[in-house]
Length: 101
Image (cartoon, rainbow, N blue to C red; front, side, top):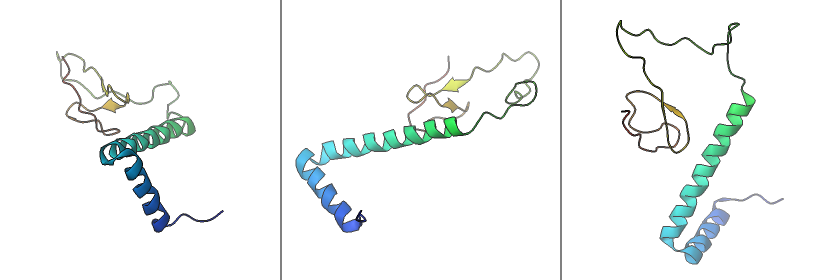
């Protein structure tokens, strides 16, 4: 099977731009990139078993100050990845995170 070099990739990119136009070609590239990221994330989750101790817990929760309400976990609405309290964007897919109410 022949190797695909930079010249061949440039020709394919030119044909895609000519067929779909520059705006649609950018959308197709973004969708392809998002699909590849999702596939990699799913394959990593399937390959690596969850690290759990003998009690079955994956880790311990951080200590909260006395009288503080328990923190609710935040998740990305696009890909479902867990997000930190101070994060403005998802580290997995880049989607803006909404404020917790």
